[in-house]
Image (tube, helix red, strand yellow):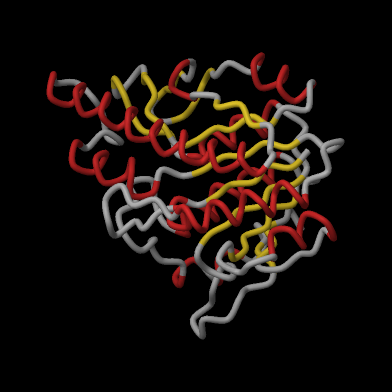
Length: 259
């Protein structure tokens, strides 16, 4: 089972509010359609990019939702996140990928930012019938904060904990995790992460869910829990690279593994 995450900075311009990169998404959709083996279960997730993050930052949704104004902001973030999700689903469907849009906020329940419940039955049913569940960064109700933001990585972490995912491909605007000389770090493990922590900065543009350090840290937690899991951070800007990775199982970019 493979989980492909399309970064918000890749499919939108995070420096310009609600700016969808339709040409990039169309290309990626075609690469998935031609590279995916339908006999292998596939999940796809995507970030909110300039759709959700800008409005979420304006309202402080990540930190909590309590006042009437904050709840209106919460609803607005959900609306624009779903808007981007429709655009992504439309591109995938036109390319021939049988996606089913599954809205995380419809069932997700959090406790201080961490998902403690999300409906799995629709996702498991989709996978059983060779349909590709499409999830995304969204809002969620929270026992402590009232409401919050759940990133695609947060949703992915919950799903990986409950499904037999063996491989995660994270597509962004960089060729991998970069060191101080801007060279790709070929492999990051729980054993060597300390030497890289100081050079992992934040994402360009507005990102309320953290930059590269947060993403790498989250992924390291996953491989600690599931040592058989392989996570790959790679460049989604390079035409044909995702297709090649799916077909030939190449390990371009940075690998995050337990060892």
